[in-house]
Length: 168
Image (tube, rainbow, N blue to C red; front, top):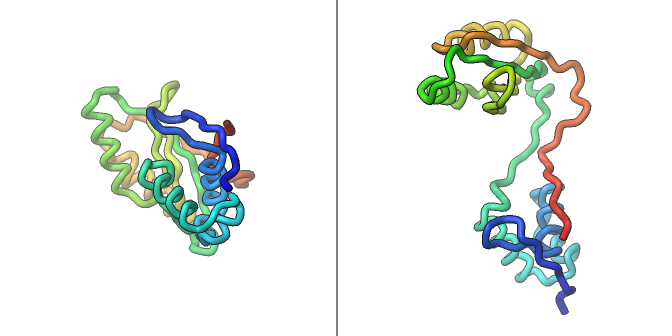
C-alpha cells in the first residue's frame, strides 16, 4: 500500500508529492543510488520508483547527473570571482560577452546581475599566472569590457550543488 502523499504545486501544471520530493532529495545526495535502494527509502517497489524518477527527469526536475571532481587534485587550485562591467548595456554587447564566456572552460559560472556591475563570473584555473593570462587574453580582450574586479577565494567554506526541496 502506498503511503498517503500531499501534492505540492511548484511548477505550472505539475505537482510533486512527498515521495517525489524525497526522491529528489535522495538523488541530489547521490545520483548513483540504485533504484532498488531508492525504492526501499520511499517504501515503494522498484517499478513505480523507476517510473517516478523517469517522470521527474522528463518533466525537467532532474536536469542531469554528474561526478563532483576534486579541483585541487586536478591542479585547478585557484578559484576566483570576477565582477565585470561593460561600457554599454545593449543587447549586442550582452550577446557578445555571453558568447565569449560560453566558449571558455575556465568560466564555471557566468551570471548577468543587477547592481554596480553587469556580470559575476566564477573562474577556476591552475595558478595566479594562468589567471593573469585568462584575464588579459579572454576577459579584458572582449570588446565592450570596461572594468573588472577580482576576488580570490582563500577558503571554500561551503560549496554545494544541492537545492532545498520544498516540503508540502
